Length: 319
Image (cartoon, helix red, strand yellow):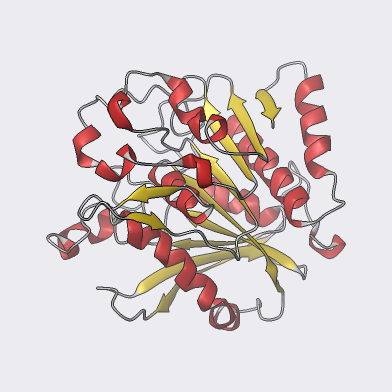
C-alpha cells in the first residue's frame, strides 16, 4: 500500500465513499451481477478486497447491502472493498428457486470474483471519484462463513462437484492474499449435524492445495453444531490443514458473527461487541497491508500491540 493510502488510523475515522449497485452483465449468469464498492475518499494506489458474504437467514445481510461494519472499516483503512450479491443471496432465493446450483451456488460464488476482476477497469470508471486510484496488482479476497469457503476456493482449496465427482479447481492467480472469517473446516464423516447433507461440497474440501498466503480468523466460542460436533476448533481447520504460509487469529469470546461484522445491531449477532469488530478490522487490514506491500510492517506492529495489551482480543500463531 502506498503512503498516500494510509489515510486513517483506527479510532480516527476517515471519510468513506460507497456506491451501489454497479451492474455487470455476465454471459450465462441467470441475473446480472451487482456489486457495492466502498473506498476511502482520498488516496491513490489503493489495494482491493473482494468480499464474499455468508449465507445467513437475513434478507439483506447476505448481499451487497450487508457487512457494513467491516466493509466501512476496511475502506477507512485504505482499501477498495467490492461486495457482490452472489446468486445464493436471500434477496434472490425466490427468483432463482429451481435454478441449477441452487440454493448455495458454491461454484458460481467463486466465479463471481473472477468476473469482477475481469471487469475491474469498468468498475473503476463507473464509480464516481475512483478512476485511476486502484492498484490492480494488489488484490485480496475475504469471506465470512459460506463466503469463507468461497474465498478458500479462490485461494487454492478444492472441492469435488457433488454431481460429477470431478475435482474443481477455482484458484484465482490474480489474488495475492486472503482472509477467512469463521470459515467451514474439514468435511467427511465429521459433518454430522442437521445441515451436513445440504452442503455436499463441504464434505470434499481439500485445504492441502490452498497455497496462497491466508489469515484464518476463528472465534473460540463459534460452535457450529448444525454442521459438526467437533466444536470451535473446526473453524481453524483451514489453517491446520493448508500448507504454509498461513496465520491463525483466534478471537477470545467470539461466536460466528465475530462481534457483529455482518450488520449494525443485527438480531442474528449472538456476541455483539463493537470493540471485537474493530479488532477484526484492524488486524485483518494490517495482515493484508503487509502481504500486499513488501516492507510494510503493519502486521508485525498489530501483533505486538495484541500481545502487549492488557485485555487482548485474541492470539496469533503462524507457520
